[in-house]
Amino acid sequence: MEKLFNSTDAGTTLQTNHEGEMLEEILDRTGQSRLYLSTDPNIDLSQLEALCDSVGWARRPLRKVKKALENSFLVVSLWEIKGHQRSLVGFARATSDCAFNATIWDVVVHPRFQSQGLGKAIMKFAIRKLRSQDISNITLFADPQVIEFYRRLGFVLDPEGIKGMFWYPD
Ligand SMILES: CC(C)(COP(=O)(O)OP(=O)(O)OC[C@H]1O[C@@H](n2cnc3c(N)ncnc32)[C@H](O)[C@@H]1OP(=O)(O)O)[C@@H](O)C(=O)NCCC(=O)NCCS
Picture 1: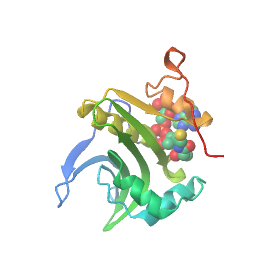
Picture 2 (picture 1 turned 180 degrees about the horizontal axis):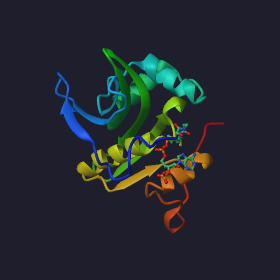
Picture 3 (picture 1 turned 90 degrees about the vertical axis):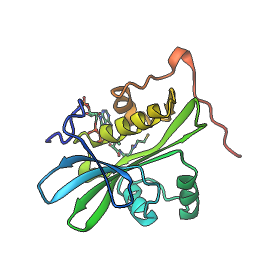
């Protein structure tokens, strides 16, 4: 399949929308449809739910999703713009102590847009934003089938033997 975004980040342009929010145009696919990365945390929850549904994730209470977005340090969304309509086609968010550490959650690209370099674009954008805040320790929890995806972005499994540990209620 055609690569829509290359690893050198070439061809990206920065723009602002009418609210002054920074948008990064990463692609003009056909002249009618464009893809943008945004850091606006105000995302239509029904669109986010539909995106998570598209990859088969279990539904979560929208009231908690809303709270999670409000309390995230960084929210990255990828939008397809066609005419006056925009659709959410990718997403990731990060929580942080705002000084040393950030953890990336909920990385997702709609199946129709997968394998085109867009997951990588979202992750590189998120990492760049976190690094611009001088955050040096970026972690995430990888499902087994996507370890290679994250490894290719420079994430290391169990550095110095460190293991993630989890506590769940009984
Ligand atoms: C994981 C996911 C975000 C990847 O997004 P994507 O847009 O398809 O990935 P990209 O096209 O940007 O791939 C970037 C690189 O990773 C590789 N890659 C992508 N998914 C991979 C996978 N599951 N296993 C191994 N390699 C993978 C690609 O081949 C590509 O390699 P290259 O840079 O050498 O060409 C997407 O498949 C997805 O949303 N999956 C369902 C939700 C999910 O599992 N999220 C992760 C939860 S931890």
